[in-house]
Length: 392
Image 1: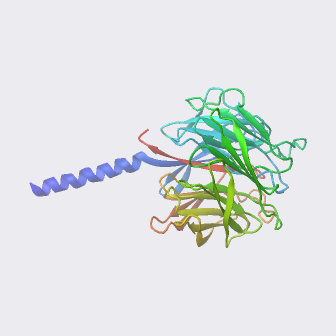
Image 2 (image 1 turned 90 degrees about the vertical axis):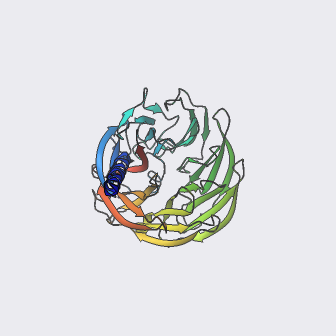
Image 3 (image 1 turned 90 degrees about the horizontal axis):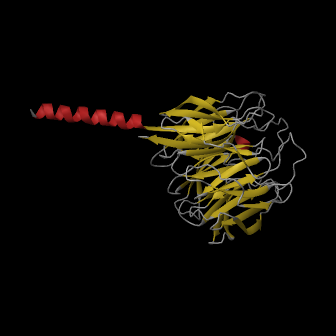
């Protein structure tokens, strides 16, 4: 009798774990950035193996450019989900709009009523979510529209279903040619930070109670080595901002106050080349940076968040240049999207999505599994976001 009970217990436990494993799935989204018909590509992650779930039209246009010049593709958060992972936003950089989708229980996307929504400017490249406010960075640097020259920051009110309500709440111009790149939201959801890549500045905004963006700081960065900064990330629980100093191959550490005023604490080295985009794990004890120049990822121990120390320099497989990256909601994987961002890569190659397993103890990267992203030659996919589907 005891043996039967033990056997039944084992069978039930196995069945429960099987059901749990099937109920917990991650889906990764990137943007095809097709110039003629933009779309979001969804990939399922099955224990590190990525497979295409589907392609979902944004009803807008992406950006196409073969010049490989700095600026047009230097941005982050082209694809972004809300905290619950139930709504996804994607920029239509070539048609000045934002697409909004409902994320279904199986990870497929369906457009919200009224999507896409006008971005409040030209060439939107980044979105950030601050509670019920959507912040948009309009870069105004589309190579196919050389007449564009006035970038801006615009904010919108979000309806309960995630749709963008009509009319911007605020619009703030950025310097012409500054190449604003990112709407990074602080952990307290009341501040927005941006790196003006070609302008050499960090810009802060306070999100007012009505959703307006109030400029709070404009801090110059030493750009004597070349264009920088690019790639920002705020600590998930403390008032600390990390910034990639691209041309210097260094990571800058700032603190900030309630108004967004920045104070440089230190600058630490990076063993990669052209450090750009940054993400952390949920607790902020590990930082991951995309090093575009040598196709690598750096891992920092940020247990002491004001004193990050690089502990791994991980070379990616394949020939693409790493751009945007994000950590899986469960912290098991780091996802990295690569592009053909160098003339040394043959046309039609380099567009991939990587799933790098994160060691649960050390936070270091282990296996590198990747899939080719099917887009026309010369198209450069961008943005990456991940959601966990649990019993939806």
